[in-house]
Length: 291
Image (cartoon, rainbow, N blue to C red; front, side, top):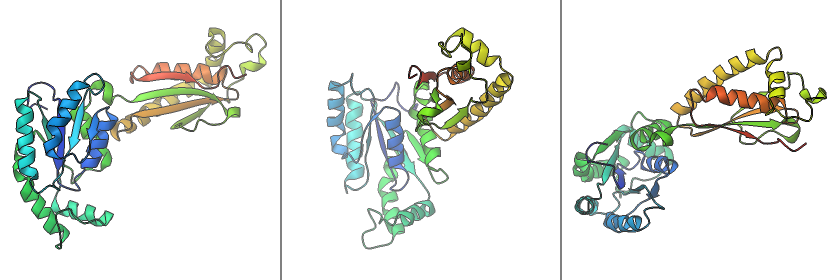
């Protein structure tokens, strides 16, 4: 985003109908932006004024504006000029796609183009493209979504508008006890019941997997090191794939019988290994203390 100096106070999402404005808006919402959808261009200045009054509560804002207003191009240009005059540093994102792609998308959802009136979809696309030509020419960023799927577009939005903190995957390594049921939000599940249970060792039974004695016992069992190494490698590959597809939150569940000893120790160790590559890793113990 280099067309304006400094960070923009407001991002304006516009472009061709069917090119992905809604997906772009949802991507910004996931990055903790406040997004106003289908906002008339004339209200952009009013919106900015309201946001400035609530700056602490609404740090980053965006507005989706479309071509339904016949005076759209003139109104949007005037609004951008007024925002510039106010020092707001507006950033205009223009989404586009080929005629063939847009026709296919409208046919797939069985909806008319907003400008086709009594004509064909392609007629509406042609009218819209002509009406938006001057806006596209002055946009700060133009994205052609013809070859993009939803995940691709969301990734481009993260790259363009997300901070390093925004774009980092947040990984939770969650220990649990199988006897209390599987975590409903688990993306991956590891079963540690193949390891001997410290519950049957009298001096370890009262302790938990957070105690060094239990940790050393669990991690020192045959197969524990091999499991940790191979499972951590598998998770690394999976997290990289999640990152490419725009997944922000990942829960890795690690279970044993009661969620007190083995799963707790293994979850702590898995999280420590993942944290070397993925800084947004945290550990939680769902069932610790239930026994």
